[in-house]
Image 1 (cartoon, rainbow, N blue to C red):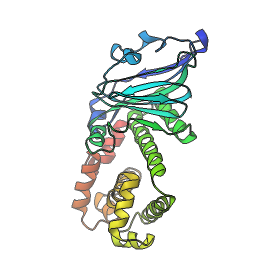
Image 2: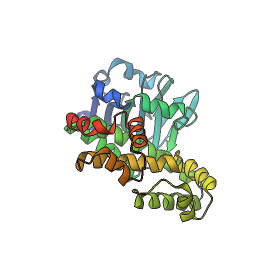
Image 3: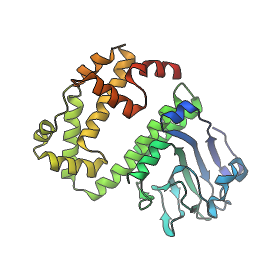
Length: 301
């Protein structure tokens, strides 16, 4: 970590290059950083260390990417789309491409901020489908270890820049988004719904090799298929079928690499009777045909 001893400031930041292969996945991490802004400090500190487009954060700016900014200490303000928010420890700000915003710490308190920037067709689809929204750009998540741990895993990937670090960092960003949105859902929904979702997830994870049968899953949690889908999607943003397919594709990606398993065998072991349908589904979700997946992963490493 690069340390700034003047006025006890500590800054770590990276603005990141990415390759065509990274863009093919539809997800890239563009910047990461952490900064302790001491009280009575002009914001942002070390202003010239940032590219020009990022510098006017305390005045007003528009970015061409997404960012998540997490405050764990201190107070300040955030303005976006003509809405004003009071920033306190545990506040999370979502910056959207093309949306004017500004934020800064209170001059008397300073703050501690962590941020991650990202872009790509996958994240933009989250915005198109309303999973990310201009109506919800400020979250009171609280200062929780789970969120801090995700930030630190992303930071570690870029400090080490080991094989597939962009891929792993983007996986961390997805985990971060999921953690934020799930905490919002839990605030709005009774614990009863959380238990239904957890039971359905547990059953699907334990039966990863079974066929996709919505009626069996619904029977396991004791409600109708339509009601289960309604609760599950409200809570996770996905239908039960989408989540089950996500689990199966994730498992398939591991089997194809670690077991040298033929595509047809992987399909049948994961409950797909039609290997061609499985192949189309896998390519649709990952952008890579299953027959080329192992080669793609090995090249990245």
